[in-house]
Amino acid sequence: MPRPPSPEIAASDHRPSLTRLSGFLLRAEDVTAAWERYADEHTDLDGWPYDQDAFDRRMAARDAALWRLFAPVRDEAAHLLDTAEAIADQLAGRSVQTRWVWQLDQLRGALDRVVAAQTAFTDWQDTHPHMSDELVHRARATRDKRAWDGLNDWITHGRAVLEIHATALRAGRPGVRRPLPAPTVVRSTPTAQAPHR
Image (cartoon, rainbow, N blue to C red; front, side, top):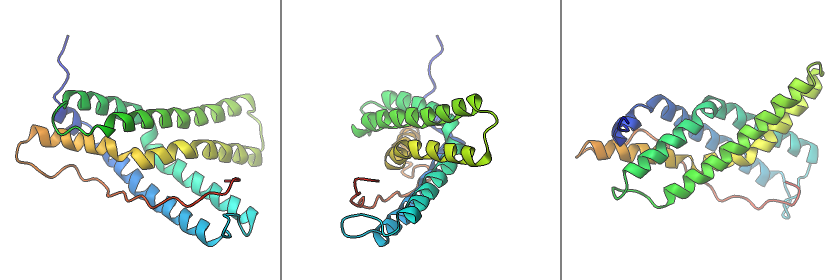
């Protein structure tokens, strides 16, 4: 049975995928920060929107933007998680963060929810091949809304994948302290959400 590649080789082999993940995290953080500002400015003290229709449109725009941003990562995300888990196992005892196992599990569950949203949309399209553009648009918006929770988990925990690969590269090159370029993802405190959100 062939030996698995060393952690640092496995990490370096995934640079393009990691770059796409890093780009998603940076741009998605901008989208969510803009949404939080909007929600703060357009809701009352109890969190209810001043204009529900405008609020819903803005939320749908947020969901659609995050779906588009994750698209370059979605098909390779499972492989990134598999590789990160294998690397973390090989790095046991060498700068391993205990939270990584939990975060990778969260990311895998989140990816399952995102894939399920796409599968439901694709199944709907297959079942209704001659629907109007308006109905397709609504179905797409429903998919994006269903995927929001999973995509938000990727925004929250996706940096763990970058950290694991960066640690592997450092472990393979003694004296090298700089990891792969990775975004500094600063999560702002979530705003209180009204029951309808």
